[in-house]
Length: 218
Image (cartoon, rainbow, N blue to C red; front, side):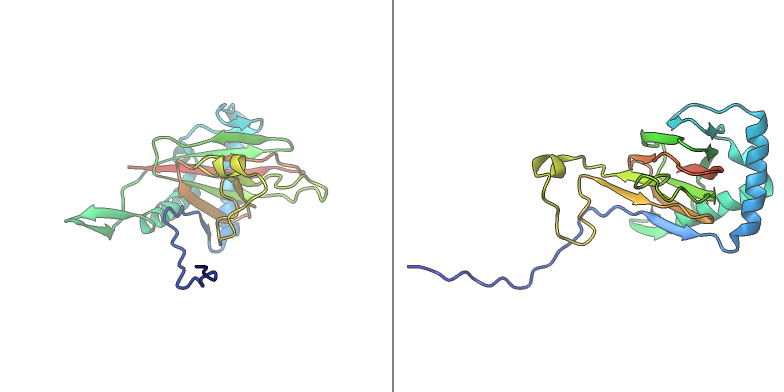
């Protein structure tokens, strides 16, 4: 007995382990950015850089709110509010949204030509965020993804190692085992789970790429 190839019907694709990467924009960011840039440049002129994942450039200590003035406080409050909107809290046996008293640690980064951040995670936090104060134009002949935020698949490289010529032909799955990239824009910020490995590719342009990174913990 032989059978014709049966038709397949009612196929559904369920994203069982989705990972959020949030991009948002501060309204009327120009005034805020001027104040933030002034505070960061003043700090960088008098304080040495710390050395963590940064390869070159200047990175402040993680006490940004103590020296960034009202502009810094306004920014961290806005991002903390977004983090609360992204988070459920267990209450009386169910999950509810609530204003969470986040413990925020934040620091400023100034990257110049060739500066980068190696792949790392932010242990001890729930959400991580990065706000972009200044992003100068880069060279027209720059290498792909120069100056961009790289997010590495936390599940590892197994899909790529097993069959390098294959990709999952499903929406949002084509980079499984590889990396996603975000091109920063002034006035935008990103929020993502702190356990996602991430890096900053070398900046290739004139001027200074200024950002503020932060961790939100409970």
